[in-house]
Image 1 (tube, rainbow, N blue to C red):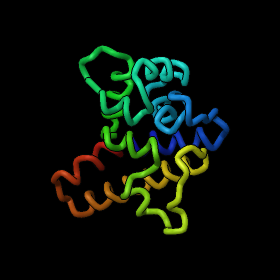
Image 2 (tube, rainbow, N blue to C red):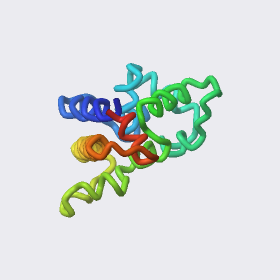
Image 3 (tube, helix red, strand yellow):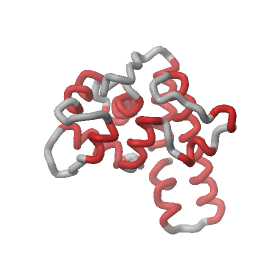
Image 4 (cartoon, rainbow, N blue to C red):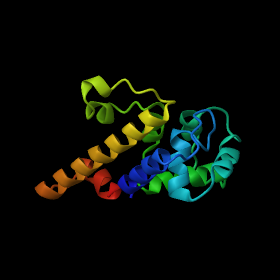
Length: 152
């Protein structure tokens, strides 16, 4: 599910969806949240501003039993295969695994530029697909196999 959500989000961004890094419903994480929850940008922003900070700060305060809408949104993101750390990485386009999959000349992504967000999301989906493929080929289990299985 995560791979599909990343690709769908990158596609939506490439076709002109409103992007605004400073808006919690239209930024990197906000766009992925739109994809996985079907909430609009305004609903996501309204839920998120009840906490202080950006998505990194907000996700650090995640509580699955709080009853807060933002925690339900984050919970849905976790259900499709993200981790809280992934949310922080997405906010700043900073996952070492994703950046390592890009050519060295393409690793200086700007976290607040639409085109760079699309590159990052597509590269992340590619990384997850390769991990899943490797797990399927080897038939191995274990911790490294858990996440890619969820991500398909």
